[in-house]
Amino acid sequence: MAYSKVYLAGPDVFLPDSIEIGQRKKQLCAAYGFQGLYPFDNEISPGSTDGAIDRLIYRANVAMIQEADFGIVNLTPFRGPSADVGTVFEMGMLVGQGKPVFGYTNDPADMLSRLRRIAPVTFDRASGVWHDASGMVIENLGNADNLMITSALLEGGQPIVQHNARPEERFHDLAGFEQCLRIAAQVLAGREALRA
Amino acid sequence: MAYSKVYLAGPDVFLPDSIEIGQRKKQLCAAYGFQGLYPFDNEISPGSTDGAIDRLIYRANVAMIQEADFGIVNLTPFRGPSADVGTVFEMGMLVGQGKPVFGYTNDPADMLSRLRRIAPVTFDRASGVWHDASGMVIENLGNADNLMITSALLEGGQPIVQHNARPEERFHDLAGFEQCLRIAAQVLAGREALRA
View 1 (cartoon, rainbow over the protein chains, first blue to last red):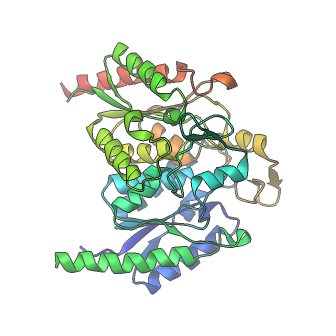
View 2: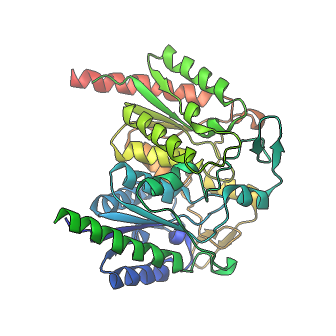
């Protein structure tokens, strides 16, 4: 089996220019010999409050995930210190199905730093544990996000790509994405060679 | 096959009293004839900055997910308008493996309302689309969270349980959790009867 089709998960679908960013991503995929599957066409139904549209989009995205040979996920923080939950759900599906996943974030800060930016954090000397502003424990392991996310990538053999994008370019800078493509091309070619 | 073991995903593991809440959840599971698998024992390593501990926790949690027959996920908003990403990753794995998942949130508000609480949102009349404070498009479908999450539950046959917990009880109120157990007991008994 050749690794050809790559599912492109990310909060990119929520950008006002999501179509353009999807086209740029698919062009980059093609340059590395892959076919990018970008969920945008299914994702947004402006102004609709029809209860059925969301399930149709879900089914279309899941069908794309089934069709994909692997995934590249944009884990840039979205509406908080962590990645977009829609992206993370899709990443979980890919990993659960045993498909290779490569990921990047355009904010290289770790979880403690990300939370500090939002609100004061506190250190409890007795237990040696950091707490966020609501008293919840902070995973202080130096990771860019929740350990289930960063470790899933590590277990797959490649750590999360941490790219320091300029804040105003956080959702348009594709250097981290292209780095994932470079890694994927190398890693997956190696796997194919082993199978051949 | 009998549905017996249930994986208990949620931000509960970040509570200072996470052990106690896990015990309460496992007791409730037992009352409904299920065995609760609670990831806490693997989740927290206070003060550790050892790069290996996260991968050991990841593997232990994934092993629990593999062992589980189904899942109950706590989708209460965590550090933002959406569910905890660790929980959502695990939910994606369960769904990707075809296991039934039931979910609840202790904040019944929809995404537009949740985002409004955090920062001003704007409505673009020309396109009929809502935007958050950073200009990203808001899925205004009346759902409690990203459509991949709510639709995954609907496709499984049961909508997300939306419980209006008091704010100070948001991470300790187990009424929504118990409602999931009630639904799971009924739905899964029905499936077993069909198979028998």
